[in-house]
Length: 167
Length: 354
Image 1 (cartoon, each protein chain N blue to C red):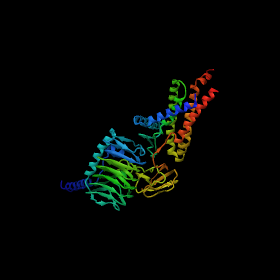
Image 2 (tube, rainbow over the protein chains, first blue to last red):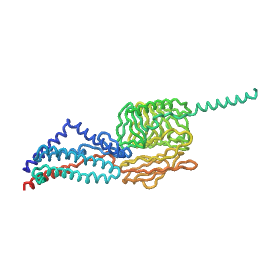
Image 3 (cartoon, each protein chain N blue to C red):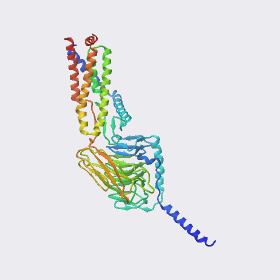
Image 4 (tube, rainbow over the protein chains, first blue to last red):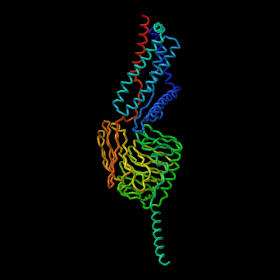
């Protein structure tokens, strides 16, 4: 694989996906996805004995009014796009690309869902803890999550290492 | 036969006196299912900021309840938007409104009630009514205010209960709309023909029920006073103030006592966030917090012969003043991730070719 080819494909894939994200046709789908995540967070918190209410992109505490909002950029889609771009640009079979896209989406969305709920609780407990977790801890963990998933996928999907693995 | 005649006259006299007293005495306004509602509107319920409602919030036949969150219904309360419960509450509100409006007046009031002390009775106003300063309601029984048009309370005005008066026994039948002034403290159930507005920081120990219009809220605390009280007062209890106190933003909330014998004396064990102070006679907690999240024990003592005490563990948080968005990755982190993905892919391929 030529390095330049990968960079160009990666950049094109990322640009195309971010451009699609900004088009009005995708707007309802993105909003619906964000609202679904908020609703699911509220459902899970209430099911586990906590208290939360969801309204659109807002997840709030009915007891103290603390509210967090899942705007664009909070729903994990930006990170997924970068990970998908790397998967699409990497020279492996289409089947492996599909596996990478699905596994990557699950890994990012799963951790982001947990991040959202944890920030909801942390924010009610301590503003300083909330800011530390939001600005430093979760940024690092999400970065590592994306890199580890990509690294594992590359090792499994690459024909040469797969052959090594079979030996 | 002759000896029975005076007895008969006496019994008739007693009966007529009793009957006339019964006719004049005010009676409880039947709230029905509205007992559980602290906020009820016909068209919309609109909230701004971290309002806390103890009790149900409902709207019917309208459907819009906006601003929850950041507002919240707690203390067993929930939000009912155009459901069967809210529909029934509106039907019961009509019954309560007509009952309150139909009770025989015992006195006429006008203008501004500030500075007055009133005992139980049915007070009729043929036009608007206002409260500037302090209105004191004294003694047991029911207080019913029949207001032909609007009720408006001034900024920082307050309604104070003494002599065993109960918030659950105070009713305001308002012919048009009611507006509670900023950082005012109001007591009683508002039965408004049109709308009710609680302006910034107003505290309501009662209910805001609107028959045909909206209820508008803004950084308020509203506590449901429970069912009307006849006879012995219910056990004394204490409700915590609004727990959201953003740093640098003026805060106005209150410890609110329910039941027992008014007036009450409030105290705190522990400390409030710096910048906030407690008014020990009204329970109001006011000021501009400069930081710190604190948990404290609020205590209220009533004025019964053998004073009762109630406590509650409360928390006031210095949460951020606005709703917080939580991006998964910042812009610089997204850039870093892109570089790391590229670097890893290229590095891996190079190693694989070696």
